[in-house]
Amino acid sequence: MGRRTTTGSQYTDATATPAPATEDVRGLRFITYLAPSIPRALFEGVVDHCRRRLGHEGASLRVETRVSGPERGTADPFSGGEADVGFVCSPSYLWLREREPSPVELLGVAPVFGSGRNGDRPVYFCDVISARGNDVSEFADLRGRSWAYNDACSLSGYYGLLRKLDEMGEDPRFFGEVLHSGSHLDSIRMVADHEADAATIDSNVLWMRLKERPGLADLIRVIDSWGPFPVQPVVVRSGLDPALKGALRDAFLDLDVYAAPALAEFGFRRFAPVTDEDYAPERLLPNASERPTPL
Image (cartoon, rainbow, N blue to C red; front, side):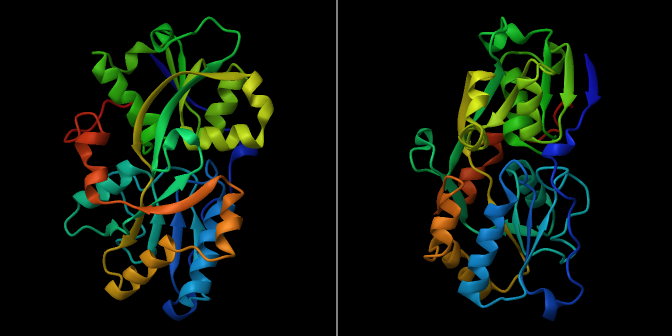
């Protein structure tokens, strides 16, 4: 199995912006690892809402586009007090919770998107896409073909696949070539452009992308779907004041008249309550106690 890395600059957001220097100036510090696949403007709308609701005019948003969350065993912005609230993919949350003491905890809310498949729940599916017009009609047809994935912290793009292969008694050698795209949007582009035979995409991301670019429906199709899985959680720094955590949770669950219509433009409906049980490792990761076979 070969492996190479590719990037598509037109789909890549700016690198993470530095956090302001002092506590008084910076206020609440938000960070998202989910853009550009989920538009940056959605997270900006959430931060604006929290500024209004909590009076934290100095609240800032940092955007990290390289991975879907802090990588296992690496430095993270919560441990160092550089971030207070984060939007991350589930594997990164689980890895951060492994640490003693854990630098993060669930805020207790997660986003609900308007796709009818979600049933008004904070969930998504791993949608396997391939190009229209090829001879791939099901996952088994991908043996020996090329596969694109966004990054190794992603549940939908990476661990969902490992789970599927594990269930089949296979490993990544099932594919002839594995390509690191850098984002769900680049994975979609690569499949549409016949640079990769298939990829798994967060179903909410795919739904938003097809609404934004309807012509993509003539280029790609879903050949399989796994899930549902709990959607990407909102985490908070464990050392944050408990009263502020509670106020943040209330703010997320009660969007104001400005935030609700602004976020609805992205197909976003609301934040819904979630618990740690929703993100139990055995529900999400193959061989959760072990490091997975890398792609």
